[in-house]
Image (cartoon, rainbow, N blue to C red; front, top):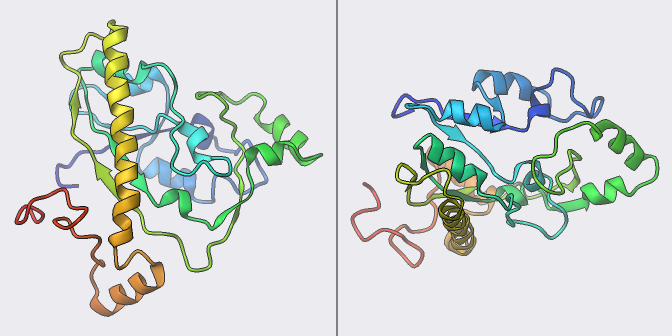
Length: 245
């Protein structure tokens, strides 16, 4: 918004189908396609990513894809990225700058999972139905399946979301044909995201408004967004006086 630039989100191709592969199940959720069209998202592919990263372009990409969206029980905040560094090679081919970011909160939107993807596929009749529906869908990450889990509602509301952007990683000086060099950058990228997740998980414990009911009440009374943990305190990444810059 500040720079008047559109960040193009890259999404799993079946999400853009007029008719969901899982029809009549309401997934993707009603209204998703209209939202995708509004923000001009594109189906993820090497060609589309490279085209989006042309000078002046910006792309939002989650390397773990559907595998990270539909996590199994006990996999909260784990990354399931491909083993190869193709992402970095494509970025280097476009001389793009990679901005790693970490997020915490979305994996706890619900209270937990009643049945995960593997358990649903293991059920009689239900599993056969899902397998028939996803049989011809593309697989972009090892062990990814387009089978949304059955969640348990979180009665006190979803947990707060936190995001942390890491130091940008330029690729202008990286040869996209240098597999070893790209792998090194890919490893650094993944470590940065994982470190950020660990940091946010710890830092949010200092947030007095992490709980939704209290945060909602405070925001309704004040009319402004509730503050989070102290950016210059125990978990701050800024020196005093720099947090507001």
